[in-house]
Length: 274
Length: 299
Image (cartoon, rainbow over all chains, first blue to last red; front, side):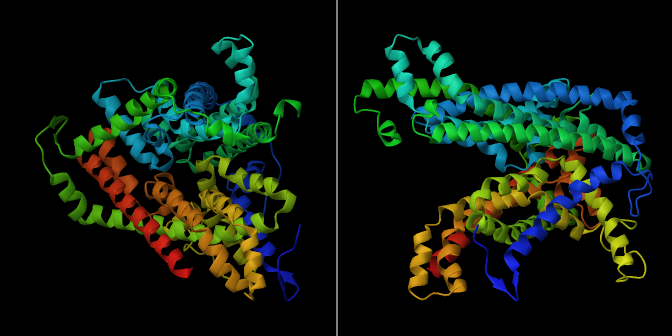
């Protein structure tokens, strides 16, 4: 690693980066810190170590229900958006056809639309059609915003994929579906796992759409939003946040490992040997 | 290797049409989903913005009244202008703060590039609500910042100046969107041909000149992407203004929410949404044009 330029004996660029990373991590690391603090007010100096906010959390049925809802919504959104993502990513990387740009433009649009606009538009349609708001409407909304991320991850997995392997399989008498299942799928499996995990994390943390589209049942972020009105509940929320943070971190690390594996496979010549 | 694959579709029209059909068929489930769940709802919103609401029934006579209210009524006009100014400031600040970080990773990251990028992404994946909440804890009256400043003897009593204003919104959003600025700039820095920089050095350019005349203009696409990726979503942010914004930090998303929840006035809410979208898109497109022009001038 080549160092940056020095002035007065200090590498200013590296120092700035360190400061910036501190700025990025400071609010995130305060959550776990205060979640173990004995005082109900998150403040320094810390007043003692406690597990009580965590144990209190598991004695809260509303929180457990929200967690269950979030898990179901996340699972459904992850599977659906990955399936839709596979279709789109495969079509984009494998085929050339008229209208491709426009179609993928619409599919990727949620990335560059304010979420409140998407939420309001979906809410309006659901209400006009007289549909009951439920966890299903939340899932549909989450799928919409997860698909662009799925497509991005999957395109990376599909790109540079050696098509001669598929042709070889077809030449050897395998059916189209057989080729997909036995040749294509194993090659792109890391990208698929990565897409599932990324979509799940997005759904788990997504608030605005869930807030607008949920009926009587809440997901974790909606539950947290409700708790934020009461100052006394804050430590419990911080404990819950810490658990979610750790869960996100674990899933993200696994997703990253798979994403890199996918990228490596796609880039290396004769990837099956590696 | 992949060149041959990309160039493969031969001149035979029969194969092309099969290719077309297969591609369209494969793309259609995802496309139809986006059509039904995104395009159609937005069209419905646009339609509503031209109607009026009489209690809970919708009057479908065409009118521009909602837009007149959205654009001239001081509350909405000010909210929109404030949201726009704030999201532009956030985008600009985030981009300026992120550039050196992306530069460092790209030019000095060596074999740690991947790890550094991963470390920078982690905070962005933690619950947005909780990060905003955390800023509330930091900036509050009894908060971490005040405690630290008191302890250091810089102030004598806690300050209320940090929380519940537009600066708090600015800080929180700049934190939340950092990675969305770093990544596109990093990607464009990676594409900069290093031999061009060596050439500039050989021709006698110093580090600053070399950066301003070679690296910076070549990374304009990344800068543009960073600005747009941050500016557009933040203009409609709802959570941060509500939690840390206070009276001065209220933004347009709050007004839109009020019009939609409890059946208040859907057409007005729709007009506010459409106006916000049009205004932000116009600003974003102008930014792109301006930056491209500026990059052309530097060279």
